[in-house]
Length: 143
Image (cartoon, rainbow, N blue to C red; front, side):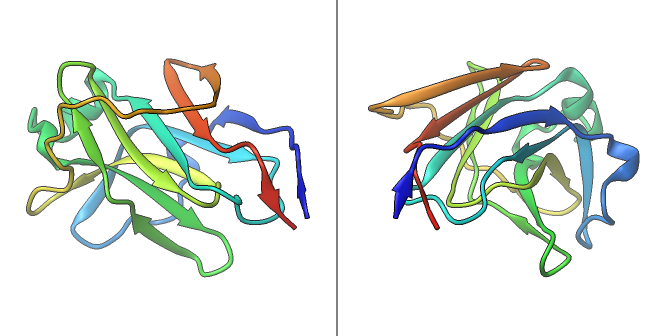
């Protein structure tokens, strides 16, 4: 069954983040997306404007930035395939679920892609919160 849902985006304290992946550390931008009780019927694109503090945590190497999602059920972090928009100062990734998110810094190789093109978004619902721009594609969930 598909239905509309109210989604909230709230800042999340970096100090309260679960331990990061080996060879990674959280940047400064952390938030939680709540309000969904199941998987999205259609993947959503999350676009985050990274901060100067995120870039500083990456040693000024923007290619080390990636979005990561924490899975409460498995107590694990997952790096999401991340697209980097250097001109827009954003990282983005698609997902079918929401939870704690952070801009993560890899301590090793390159994390984010180097995309520079625009993504066709179709129908969107846009939220702005604390300098984050989160774009959801598909506002329906499976129950």
